[in-house]
Image (cartoon, rainbow, N blue to C red):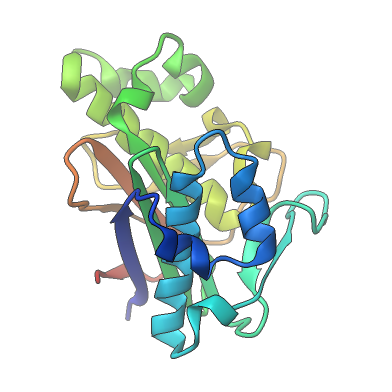
Length: 225
């Protein structure tokens, strides 16, 4: 048995058709962004993907948010109001948006641009002490790929649980960048999920890495589009 997850990606575009799919609240949030294009592309991709899978009008879908930690409806993990059994997650950079959708399991996706992993102190904010050895000897692009891969795995898990960056990524230990993806240890104070399946994604862009997490003990079957 496996858990089926649908993954779609789109290059960021500032075209008007995407903006026309968003609701009033989403357009207001987009207007507050310094660069609204990634937000607009990503949220339009969510609507198009869910609309296709559910045979609904993408522009007519209604969403709500709820924070796992404080239960606020002003922020937190989004969900689809009129199809509660369906779950989705969105991640975007300045150049690429990726969405994952699944029925029956909570999911999270994260994508990282290699250049965003190129900063001093990456290990301090992202890695546990035991994870450092897996990066020894890596340099240049190989190091950035390794960082982005592990970073995406951690963020995907935290998005699936709904915690986001309320939980320190260094408290979520995952397998090394040259190993098959998996959760090794959960050291956060927040309750650990009962099960996590994790996969790395094969994207069409060479300068990004991404991962999908599902809160299930079944392996994830990734279906592209």
